[in-house]
Image 1 (cartoon, rainbow, N blue to C red):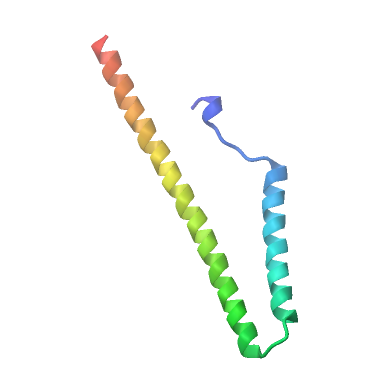
Image 2 (tube, rainbow, N blue to C red):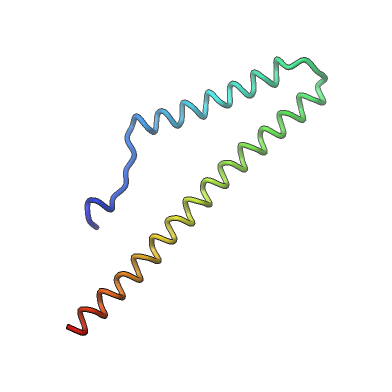
Length: 89
């Protein structure tokens, strides 16, 4: 595998992503706890937030998997093309 094909993330970016996710969760929980209203309304907001979080994680994972599958298909196609060219020359 060539060096430019290896994708890696920095420790700083990983910290930023995890910290921002944790801060967002804390903010949502604090907002739900502090909102004036009945337990029913707070429960609705809590369940809606959990569903939004799980949907976001699922969507991002699915999009990443789809992107990586396309990259693999392109690599296989490129390898076949290169093999055919090498056989012709």
